[in-house]
Length: 367
Image (cartoon, rainbow, N blue to C red; front, side, top):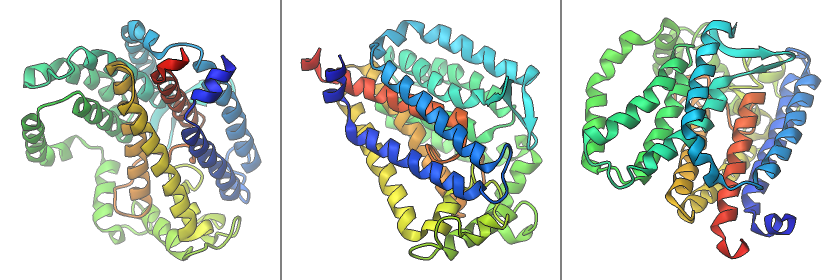
């Protein structure tokens, strides 16, 4: 079995994931070594590395079961996901004005991160039954309601960013399932018309983020501070960067959340344009391999799983990089594999593990 896994794995996908995680651990160490954030900068690096090792073991262990065996468990997984998201509302811990975490001993987990992968599994099961049948509004209603319930629970935390990730996952999966383009055009048109009314359901800080996205200078020491400092950090890195542990914006505390949401700004400042290009190229190759796996999956369930994972990773990459460079509003979406976060790292690595599982079983001659 070990030889089959060794020969059947998509090693380019594995290499890109490992390279991104390695870069992330180094940048987390650089971003936190001066101020000893939380438990201490070195402890954050240690925790990230420890959970990388644990998750690496899980990724290998995942190859022993057939991903298609997940299909009968889709509904129980969905119910458990809803229960955990409900639990966050009642027993969750708060930070930075949001209640998104559950404390389990010394570990703080973010259920909304894990829910993204769980929802992909559930959506794959329900969409597979409607493959090439998504040609009316009626055919979309069950799937939309199915997704709307967990998305609403996450939005209430509040976590608009993860809610939007759900939407990106949904869009990618129904597209690959053959949704009628006329429906897409009508839905986009309706969404554009309703967009002004969405303003009234946003919280004040979310409205502020949109306003400062349009003009950061309206509140340069408040809501616009993150964007301004992030653009300064990236711009000051020039071509080769200032060097690891030498970024002034990051090391002198001008750049907030420099080890989580704004870690790409640290990459730009300390590794420069070249470092940013290397990171983006690694992501590009990783996403290409994920698309390749989706195209070559043996069955529709596997194709939908791979498409959902690809949509999730691609959307998070675009939003995070767009946010740090000032071309997207600020949202709490981490940079996959690089930002510090036990829950996010676990979810992303298990997602890659599932992709490897699909790729392994697409090579029928091996089994």
